[in-house]
Length: 133
Image 1 (cartoon, rainbow, N blue to C red):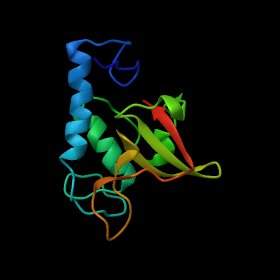
Image 2: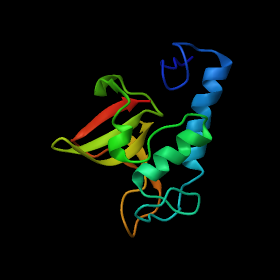
Image 3: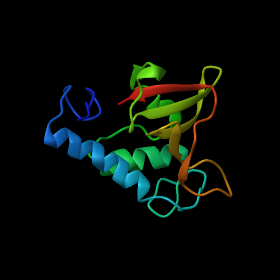
Image 4: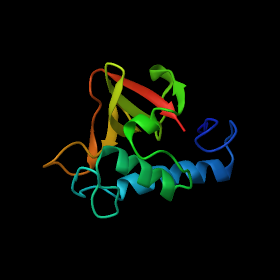
């Protein structure tokens, strides 16, 4: 049994509808695996980091901001309480510079940089905050 938190899917719940929405986020991000990184791209053929996050959430039925900075506006979640599907925002001082989707087990789905493709990678060791739209 999994618990789906408020904001991402709805009220704190284990309802079938909530589980379905959560599964859609993970399905849609995995479906983008291998697509190329392109600065400023928001899919469906290529993505930059925040474009990938926005695209996946839209496909799962949740409208969020386009940039990492706009995605930072979500509800703050303690890093130790993050769940798959949460948005990770990587900071450089007070500036958001990268977005990803937490995949569980110390990994994240991301469109990292030019020359890389969308994939599941190890979490960066520091500099991230967790948000829930």
